Length: 244
Image 1: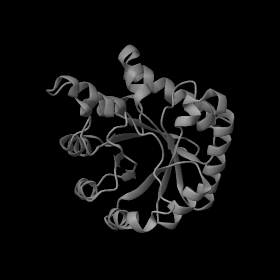
Image 2: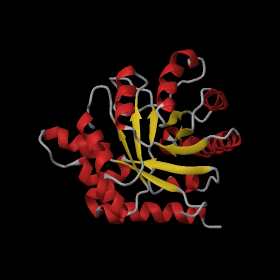
Image 3: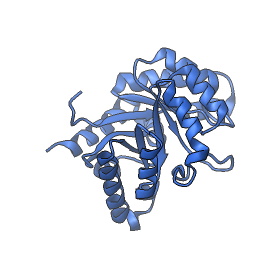
Image 4: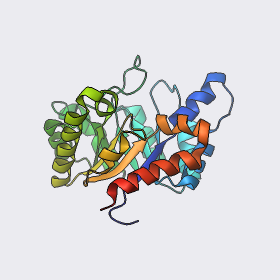
């Protein structure tokens, strides 16, 4: 892959949400991951929540066995989840905050001030040869804390940028500054949450970005146009944003 190419990670959680609404085996998130792979995804993301509301333990193991793309395993910082990550051995373990009552992840993980609490989980992941990714807010304090605890990757939360048009310009500037700081500290910078065709371009244009993780929008769009068209268009918009 060209060094200037921005990777697209496709999150297939909500295929599992649809499956679980009726029970049974369909639609199969592994089949969705393979379809995303065939359509041009560069990686697959799946979040095994503590309440198993969408992805299940068996899905994570099946995904790791089935796909040839890197698996980004989103998880909470708990002993149970670290045990699963160390068994499955994904390409990266992305630590995200979780609250049982939330509909979706509402913000970034608070690392600053919690280093002593979180570092034992982080060390187990890194000691097992798994890349440590932290889903955080685009703030100097959180980025410096991520670097201090030995993260390999930071994924910047883009929710407010996507959902609050009034503050979009200031949020974009904040994300761009955070990406530059992360890069200067040796952290690989990713971004995600809420990105769609209208919002992806400006984030993709940030030169320090290496990967965007997009799920809910692509899964919904694929219902109407199919995986090839939905992922293909997102891929084109990302590439166009990187074109000199």
